[in-house]
Image 1: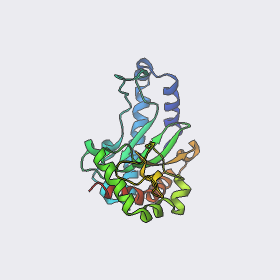
Image 2 (image 1 turned 45 degrees about the horizontal axis):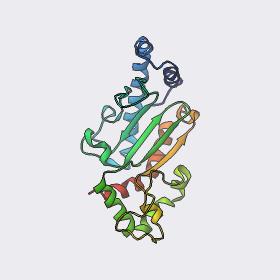
Image 3 (image 1 turned 135 degrees about the vertical axis):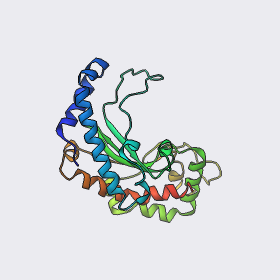
Amino acid sequence: MKISKSTFQFLKDLRENNDRDWFNANKERYQVAKEEFDQFIGGLIAEIGKFDPAVTHFTAKDCVFRIYRDVRFSKDKSPYKTHFGAHITSAPKKSEIHTRAGYYIHLEPGDSMLAGGAYLPESKWLRAIREKIYSEISEFKKILNNKSFKEYFGTIEGEKLKRAPKDFPPDHADIELLKQKSFLASHKLKDKDVLGVDFLEHSSKVFKTLYPFDAFLNSANG
């Protein structure tokens, strides 16, 4: 259950040769790399399931994103993503994985990360998150100020409103948290971290630290 140098080399080569002819000529390399990533995600789901059993109904196939880019509305017509990514959540169905805060893994040479939270949640969920933060600010700040959380993630990220959201007091002591439109936490990885023999263990440890943050956001979504 580890990521090999050959998988990273494939992604590096794809970045330099992002076209269909090269990809088709290297399809076997892609399949080997993808199978390795899928196996890793399967192992990661099992590890996350030890502290968050709600994710164990999914398989790696449900969580891993396709490598093919949707270029219909993009100026960049490169046909392939140059990373492997997966999003593991407690959503009831695969089609609903973006309705829950979860665990995101992004593997890309020079730009890998482990992350989670709620990315631009739909309006009803966003409103509920803000109301929960407003009424339970001490609990939320306790999560954000946890020593391990700060060590791995620092501060939360994401787009913000310029003004206080409707129906919330502009002079609230923590109005900056309430202005968030996304609630994201990310842990940057060096290539040597991803290729290390203990990467699965490290990923599980980071995501266990993330769990209370995700759980807080998800509890606002019913």
